[in-house]
Structures are given as structure tokens and as C-alpha cells.
Image (cartoon, rainbow, N blue to C red; front, side, top):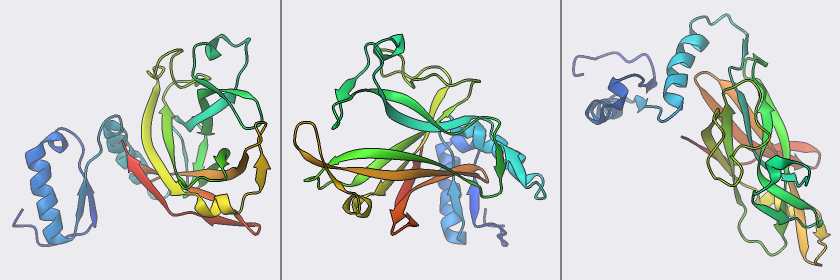
Length: 233
């Protein structure tokens, strides 16, 4: 490493067998700090995706449109349907409007084989019911990938926390929805408690070799991006 005198990149992504070596990784991180280079490595199900993506996305800079390899989305609470066998034995609750809902439903943000333009942002809107007296406004959204043809209606198996085959957790995006909450109208629930319906968007960009995501909402008719943090799995 001491023979390296010229650095042409500010970031290095380690993949393959050497990336899994704690010794090699620690030495490269140390070298990176000395030379102003960020050294990172993917972990879990994203290891192969990053290696393949680096080749597929950078082999030809003239490519202006690509195709998504997988479905990308997040978990939502779906209205309960007593005729749906998939809804049986799942965690359920009654929302502020008195409607029964079940957890772990699938909501697609980017479909598989969808054309992707350079820096194109895919957006889906969601709503939270937040009690008027709430003091916690940090909200996390888990982004999943589904690697098979057609996604299941639910992410997890009935009566289990285990995911259906094909689903993988990719990353978690978190943001402070305090400003969004304060701009939302007050409402009264069926139990006479005051709450607000906080509507926001989850925005995904499939760029370079990784996914970037953030939250946004409207203020005075204008789209505002909130301060968001993203962690990869």
C-alpha cells in the first residue's frame, strides 16, 4: 500500500472474497484514511448485487436508460378482507376511522423490468395516523427487493415473521416528519381522540451501484425533502 502515490477515486467498494477478510478490510480502511479515500464493503444479500451492478452500470457511460432487475417496495397495512385466506393469522388492528387492518402487506414502488432513466426518481405516497400528543416524529421505512416474477400480497408468511422466498431487506430510510405533522390537519377518531393524518412520499433512485432513498411532503404546494438517513443491510 505504501507504493500508491496517485489516487483517482474518492471511494472504493470492496467485493468478492477479499472483501470478507477482516484483516484486509481493516488495512484498506487505514490506507484510505491516510489517502482521503472512503473504503466500504457491502454486506448480506447486497454483496453480489453491488459487484454485478458496478459492471452493468459503468461499463458504458453512454447508456441513458436501464431496466430494474427486481421489484422494490415497502411494507404497508392493508384493509382486512375476511375472504382473503392470506389475511388470516396476521397481526391486525383497528385504525382511527374504525377500519380493521392487517400488517406486512406489500406496496411496490419500482416494478421489475421497469425502464430507469438517469437519476430518475420513483415515488409512492403513504399515510401515517399520528396522535396529537405525540412527541416522536422519527419514522423509518424499510425498503425490500423482490427477486422473483410476481410479488406476494404480503411480505411475510401467515402467522410468522419469516419473509416469503424472494423478499430481501435492502435498506432502511429514516426521516424526521415533525414539520410534516405540524402542517397536517387535526382529525377526530371513532374513539374521540385527536390525531393527524401525515401524508408523505417515499422516493427511490436506483443509481450507480446502490439505492438511495428519502422522504418528502408538500409545504404551501411545494415539494420539500426532509432530512433523511439511509442504512444498508
